Figure 1 (cartoon, rainbow, N blue to C red):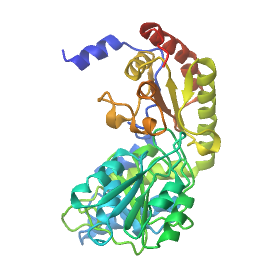
Figure 2 (figure 1 turned 90 degrees about the vertical axis):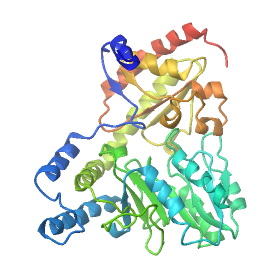
Figure 3 (figure 1 turned 180 degrees about the vertical axis):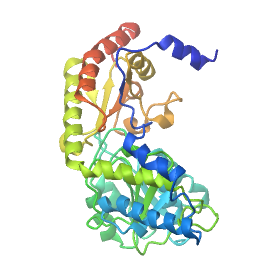
Figure 4 (figure 1 turned 90 degrees about the horizontal axis):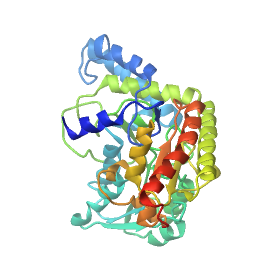
Amino acid sequence: MSNVEGLLEQHGTPVQDVYLDWENGSVVDKEVLDAMIPIYLEKTYGNPAITHKMGWETYDFYVKAKTKIAKPLSINPQSLALTHSYTESNNLAIKGILPLNKKRKKIIVSEAEHLSVIHAAKSLFNQQYQVDIIPVSNDGTINLDVLQEKLDDNTLLVSLQTINHEIGTIQPIKKALEIVKDKNEDIFFHTDATSAFGRIPLDYSKIEVDMATISSNKILGPKGIAGLYVKEGVKIKALYEGQLSVEILSPDVENPALLAGFAKAVELQFSQFDEITSNITRLRDKLLYGLVTSIERAEVNGPSGKRRAPDNVNISYLGCEGEALTVECSMNGIYVSSGSACTSRVLMPSHILTAIGRKPEEAHGSLLMKLNRLNTEEQVNYVLERMPKIISRIRSITGGIEL
């Protein structure tokens, strides 16, 4: 028996299962799956780049599906490049802009960006690019004064998240964009909107960013497909070479079934956007308030109120260790994460929590919970009933060390 099999056998069956680790893994909505299956079996499974009936039918479907995805962003569907993941989209935005803009050599990101942005930017050091990292406040908000100071004639690209994926900070992207463009209209502005798409309104006809990343799996769509909005007139180059395809910036055989799933997920999320957002916000407030008022030494990470993403709950439980917490939660049927998935198997504190001033031991004792339209009030009530007992048990083991 493998170690994992042994762990699963010891785990047993909890009284109730409540999945709140939507940041790191997600199911596909049943209606999304239903939209995908016919593509695999019956229709529009051809290559949209090929000139025959099946190819034409697939291309027609392709255009219509991209139109559905583009609509809530208020963008031209032709401006949406499909990729295989938001990591690819972020890398494409940062590295794809370089070959056609070789004179300027500075890239600016914040210290709380997703690691796919930070690592993509830092990988350019050996190509003589300068990467400036701007700080964030203790609630994760980017420092706009430092951003303004860092901008100069050598600046090529600024990449800042719309919403922080770990602590839910809604960033002042419109103001940041104004600062950048007031300095120099030719500086490119990219935003990783992965954690914002489907949570807050995004209208790129009004907030005229040059590039924006979105993803299917963050709104209960399939993994393996994401998007990069590239504003008309912005020229970037594909990261790799491949065959002739409809997607010039991701040259590969297109996957119509994944596109069908992405389009359906967008349709479901945005057809009742206000209702979904209102309900998730209500459940978030109930969960957040209930946890910090029923558990001593529980400190919220990130902002409060309307400056916090509607789905985000991130709390540090002082005197606890994150891995022990996630295991104990799992034994009770509550599935959450400590820190970010990128570092979950490495005993290092989250770079985002340390960026907002958390001590390493405080960061290690944090739990991230996210909500979506599949979560219920019954589930939130179960979490509120179980969590004080879970924290008490962990602290009884560790001695509840004061941090």
